[in-house]
Amino acid sequence: MYDLCLSSCGLKLSVICSKKPIKEQIDMSSVPQIKIPATYMRGGTSKGVFFKLDDLPETAQVAGKARDQLLLRVIGSPDPYGKQIDGMGGATSSTSKTVILAKSSQPNHDVDYLFGQVSIDQAVVDWSGNCGNLTAAVGSFAISNGLVDADRIPENGICTVRIWQKNIQKTIIAHVPVSNGQVQETGDFELDGVTFPAAEVQIEFLDPADDGEEGGDMFPTGNVVDQLVVPDVGTFQATFINAGIPTIFLNAEDIGYQGTELQDHINSDTAALARFEKIRAYGAVQMGLIKDISEAVARQHTPKIAFVSAPKSYTSSSGKNVDAADVDLLVRALSMGKLHHAMMGTAAVAIGTAAAIPGTLVNLATGSGEREAVRFGHPSGTLRVGAQAELICGKWSVKKAIMSRSARVLMEGWVRVPADSF
Image 1 (cartoon, rainbow, N blue to C red):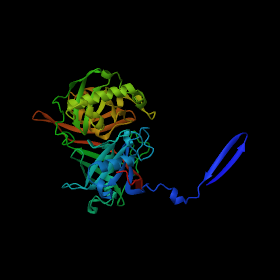
Image 2 (image 1 turned 30 degrees about the vertical axis):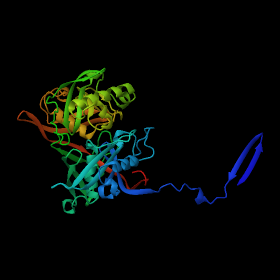
Image 3 (image 1 turned 90 degrees about the horizontal axis):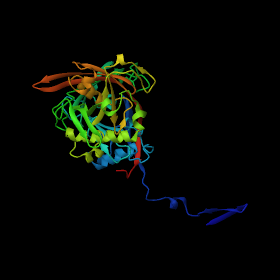
Image 4 (image 1 turned 135 degrees about the vertical axis):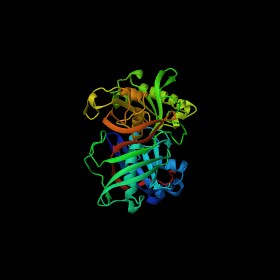
């Protein structure tokens, strides 16, 4: 050992050096990082980390603790700071997402699509629903990564990708533009909530209602409008619907809002967020999704909660003016406990479906009447979604909901995690 002492103005500095070899100073209990092939993609107004199933470590190729722990570490959760600094997540519900894709095991489908919504501050990966926004990227990834048979990909034109959504056991069709045999990502299609234009990808959600996983009807209570009683909060009119994703719709005025609110108005109000979560938990029980409100903590992805109002003019988060005459209604929706900056794709399916069915709160906000498409205002601008509803033997049925999104590869290569993460 060497001691070097320097004295100045009564201060003493000691420097201690060791003669031990550097390798002896290294903590030999440390583990190396492993690297896993991955692609970081934007789909609609969301971003996520995409994996091919057979590229994952063997223990993570099946559902369970190892898979969940791996994806949590990839994204950087749970993070008590709420920033996901040590992972790929972006500290919002729109950017804390993972996707696992494989060659489809279903007849007449190209790709199996499994979505995991990763909690930011809790050790939870929620597998209870789909991400409609990232669906737009699924078709592109499948084409580029050999999950679609080559003879089904045109040299130039539109490639129809048949997606089996494993979370909800539904078929989704993505119409992906192809140029010179490659996925076309650039274009002039503009999507409110996304800064730059890109190529348009049309998405068809087939039979989006009657959630197969839950085994319920489109309207789980059998009513298009119910009374939702929330202790110490109030009693509200609500439309409970299983279409695209289980969703609870409320009237904006019933909960003290106009329907023109932007993110900061809601997300900066911790009391309001807690109230929304309590309403969501009691609504989930009434929908039959959970048996007790305590279960809502581990089921953050579903159901969604949204509030609607008649058209009003407002300024979007980008400074764009949205005129009341240009929309059929206004909708604000929460995802993972926070107001979404635009609109979740699956919630847009629920909006379009509910708008097509007379008497729902969404339909009434449009002025009622029969509709096959609706344009609604959200915090970032507007979105159009189409749905055709039929009343068959006393039950409402929707065969298809359609919307346009865009998608783009942001980065591809490998994601790295410590080998003892899972």
